[in-house]
Length: 477
Image 1 (cartoon, rainbow, N blue to C red):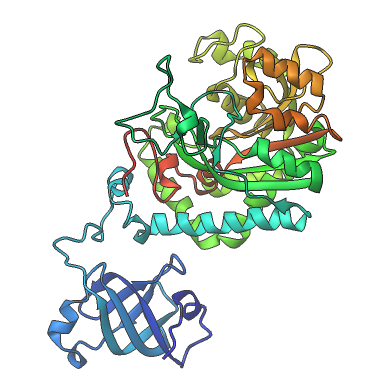
Image 2 (tube, rainbow, N blue to C red; image 1 turned 90 degrees about the vertical axis):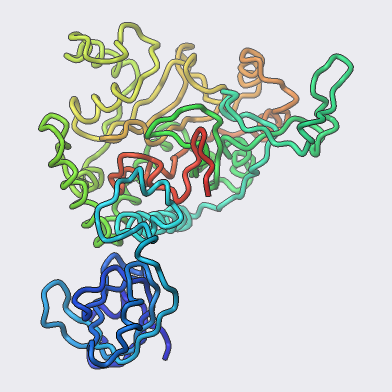
């Protein structure tokens, strides 16, 4: 008999028919009721066995974590908690799970413990929900851009350029590290390396995808990126995924409009297509909140936060206006901010971004026109000589979720900026070339995919929204 997914059994349309269901045992109660899950939905199907019709030794192998196959009739359920169940005629054990050794017994496990068994954590309700939502968001990203006529471009993972200019890169080499060739003055001789030059894992696909936008107009890249930043926090990963659109003929205002439309689309897609998983995560978050002191509890539930994004127009605010608000705010005057705001030019921290969103405006915020000193070399200089046409989108509970800008399309200005920041021109000759031959105004932004998943799922730690987190001192699995 062909296998039927549990999500299709639970829709009720198969009552009275014979089905085959395969999945993993969540619980087996009273030698009669087996809760089976195959990952197609957060909901289990209940399979009911007649104890007297099956060998006792066979039923003893039906333990939490075991993989089984059942054939039986779908019937309406008389019990609470499910509308249908399967009356089991045949039961096969596909894979045993020793209850003395299987670490995911039916009890509450801490997220820290589950990170230690990341190869098994997808079998919990929490991580099953996260993985399904993650998939839905991947699809939604591609659908949004495809529907708008964008083209997906694969940008290189190994690169010789540092898009952010921060130098926090993982180096790529095929040298024997016990015998690295060196030049006469003792430096590493990269001419002897595989690529004949110094290379690293990409920190961003932006510079390369800009080359495509100068031919195809509207493009995006969605790929893995790497930062060798020694940040052991709940917000940072060494390996993560970035969505980076680049659009010819877009100025800063167009860029902000697209970013707002994109975020609203993703959140709306999750609300529409991930209802069961979001309901579970919303309930989970509320239960966690009850254990916190009153002043640390979230003002909105997860579902309310998501609806808040869809329902509200984003506030547009210049950096200069934001500094005035923050400088005169109560937390700043009472020295409650960890980083006090005194002067124009300060680099805003997460606490400042969240204050603007959660306390002052109570709406998502897009900040724009930042001081040129605190932004990357490729951002377009404004006419005031002090700021660049940069923009950041700020969300409740998370702070910055998108960073972007109008790019500097003027050759002379960009060349001077590269020189000023000490970036070797030979590393970026091709990027400068784009400004020599048919240059055009263009803009783009970057969305850290895991930050987005963190927001949509309500998870407090970014390590819990990617299957195998890569962080300092951790490359397990």
